[in-house]
Image (cartoon, rainbow over all chains, first blue to last red; front, top):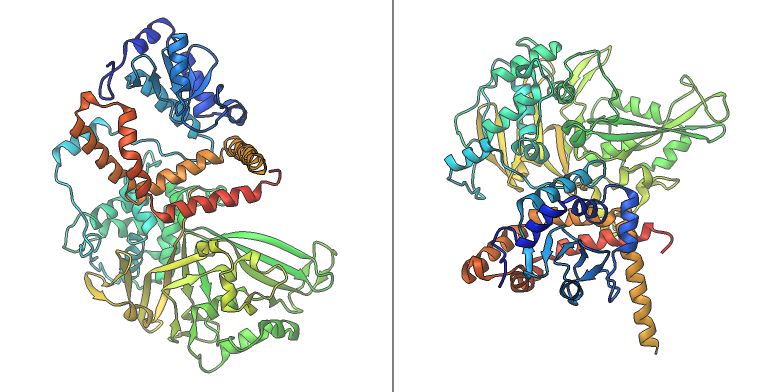
Amino acid sequence: MGTRAGGSSCPHVVALKESRGLDTFRIILSNFVYCRSPRARRLKAQSCICHDCATTADRLHCCLDCVYFGCYGNQHIQEHAKSHRHHLALDLSYGVLLCGTCGDYVYDEDVNKVIHEEKYRATQGTHANGTVAWQPSSNELNLLQHNPKRRKITHNSTIGLRGLINLGNTCFMNCIVQALMHTPFLRDFFLSDKHECLMMQSQNHCLVCEMSRLFQEFYSGCRSPHVPFKLLHLVWTHARHLAGYEQQDAHEFFIAALDVLHRHCKGDTDYSNHHNPHHCNCIIDQVFTGGLQSDVTCQACLGVSTTVDPFWDISLDLGTSIAQADSQDILTAGFLTAGASAITNGISYTSTSLTDCLKRFTRPEHLGSSAKIKCSHCHSYQESTKQLTMKKLPVVACFHLKRFEHSTKFRRKISTFVSFPVELDLTPFMAHRRNGLDTFSISPGEMCPTPASNENRYSLFAVVNHRGSIDSGHYTCFIRQHRDQWFRCEDDIITKATVADVVNSEGYLLFYHKQLVEYE
Amino acid sequence: MADSERRIKDAQMRATINQKLVETGERERLKEVLRTKLIECGWRDQLKAHCKDVVKQKGLEHITVDELVAEITPKGRALVPDSVKKELLQRIRHFLAQQSNI
C-alpha cells in the first residue's frame, strides 16, 4: 500500500529531486505557505481556493506539476493526482508534500529542510516571532543522552529557593537578587538559555551572564546557601557608587542593576554610551519598561502638550489619604502642590494604601506661579497643570514607596503602614481612561466594563522590606513560589510565610507582574 | 428561499473574513498564539502521547497520516480548554472590530 507515515522518502519525490530539484517547491512555499512579503500574502488570500468546489478550508493542497489548487476534504486534490497523473501536491497549511499515488504524506529530509528554512525566513521581519522548532545541537544531544533522569516539579518542591550569604552589609543586594530570581519572565528567559552574550572581549564581566549562572544556581536543587561574591564583584566594578561594605539602598541597587543589565544585553561596557534607550528590545526592557505619559495643560489656552517617557519603576510619595477629597475640587481650588508639600511637613502620617498613593501620583498637579512653562499652543509663559498617567504598562511593575526622606532640614524614615493588594488593577491609572473624565469617580462596578478588562491586572510576587532607621537597618524580602506559596528570605535563611504576613509587612519595594501577557 | 440566501451570504462573509485574516498576516499571528497557548496548557503533550499510543498500537508500518488524523481528531478537539477557545474568539472579534471595510 505504498509509503506509510513512518517510511522515508517515496520514489516520486526522489524522481522530482533528480529531475527538477526543489526550486518550484520552495517558490510555492515562500508565496503561499510561509509568505515573505505583504504581496505574497495578498496573493495567497486571493488564490488559495479549491478550483473545484471554491472552499478555502478543508486542507487545501497545491499541485506541483500544474497550476491547480484543490481541497483534501472533498477528495479534489486526490482526484486531480489520479486523473492527471500529477503525483505530488503541497499542503498549504504546513508545506508538507502529499504523494497522491502512494496515498500519504512524504517525509523527505531535503523537503523538510526547505520547509524549515522558509518557515524561519518568513518569521524574520514580521511581528509573529514564530516558534521555530528547537533543533538540539550535537552538544545538547550528548547532554540529554548522558542525563536521562527527568525531574518533575511537584507543588511542594523547594527548587528555586536558595539563601544568599551576606558578604558584609549586602542584604540590599540579596533581597533584590531574590526578587529578580523569582520574576517569572526573567526565570523563563534565563532557564531557556536565551541570553547570547555580546560582550566579546570581556564575557566574564557580563552581568547578564552572571544572572544566567545565578538562575542555574537557584534552580539546581542545591540546598546550601549560595555565596554571591562574583555578583558583588561585578556590581562593584560596574556601579562604582555601590562599592564598599557600607549599607546601601536596595532601590538604588535595583535601578543600578537594571541599568547595567540593560547595557550588557547590548554588549555595551562603556558608561557614557547610552544610545537610544527608547527603542530597546533587551529582556530587561521587555520586562520592566513602561511608558509614563505627562500631560501639561496650559491654564490660559487649555492646550495640552503630551510627552511619553520610559520608566522602570514608580516612586510613590506617602502622603495622607485623599480618599475623601474630590480631586476635581482640589484642582479648581488650585492648591495641589501646596497641599501635597504641607502634608509632607505635617507631624504624622496616617496609614495609607498603594491605591491612594497611585491616585495621588496620577492626579493633576498645579505647577504654581513660580514654574511658568512656555505653552506650545499659545506661545506664552503660563501657569499650567501637569498630570502623569500610564501610557504603556510594563510586564513587571515595581513600586518604590518613598520611606526615606532626605530634605535639607531632616533625614528620616517613614514607617507608616501602607496596605497593598495581592491583586492590582492598573486600569484607573491608564492614559486612555482620563480623556476629560474624572478618573476616580468611576464606581467599582464600572471598573470592569468589558470582558477584556483583566488585561491590566497584576499579581504581587515579591516584596522588599526594610527594618531599622534611615542610618542603619536590615533588608529582607518575601517572594512568591508556585503561584500561591510565600517565603521570607533573610540572607541565608528562608522560612515559610503566609499571604497575611506579606500584606501586613512594612513594604518598601513592591513587585507585581502582569497576569495576562500579550504575545507580540 | 430566505434560508439559501442567508447561506450564500454567510459563505461570502466567511470568505471575506478569511481573506482579510490572510492578507494582514493576522491568521499567522493567531496560529502562533494558538500554538503557544496549546503548548502552555499541555494540550500538545497530551495529544502527542495519544498519537504515540495509536502508532504503537497499529504498528508504524501500518498507519497513514489520514488514519492517525481520523483517530486523534475527536480527542484533540475535546481537549482544547475553553479558556483558549474564548481567548482566540476574543482576538478574532477584536481584529474584526478594527476592520472598517467588512
